[in-house]
Amino acid sequence: MNVLKDLKENVFKVLEDQMALEDFERWLYSSEELQSLMNESVVLEAYTVNYNQRDAKYQLKKAIFKYFGEDEFLLWKVKSNLRDLIANGGNRDRVLNDFYCIGYDGYTFLCYIGYYIYRIEDTEYCGNNLEALLIELKRDCEILLEEIEKQEFENPGFRLNDYRPSDKLEFNPLEVTKKWWNFWR
Image (tube, rainbow, N blue to C red; front, side, top):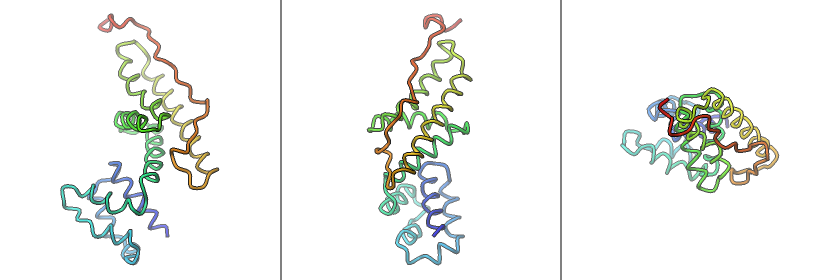
């Protein structure tokens, strides 16, 4: 059932602000395939959400997550956001901040990527090259995404907390090319 996979993907996109709730509702009600699957509980739940409520996104999450789960969403979210960082999407700061916070929820390997937000902020004060730092970020995201996808392929039922980092990602402390007290020069 490819349409159920599309439903899951679109729900995840809504929750990650990659798809507007209005677009999701429009897609949902225009899909004849989904309407023919009203006997599926997850589809029925999606149709019962009132998308005009102020907390519609929360209601959608509450209704649908019992069918997909937090682990599945988190894995999708990390992989999707890594792809976004690799493609230089417009959500860089939000994603990096999110990774930094998720890193302190037990996924410490994401702290390394999330810490780039501070390294990027420090470029203007420390005289570092922003373009070189963004290239390094992209490379690290590619390595992490490749490792996660490899472990996911090798291990059926893989969850993000099953990920074991390799030594390919090596944190390089911030190199200071100017003294901090000379940041205005």
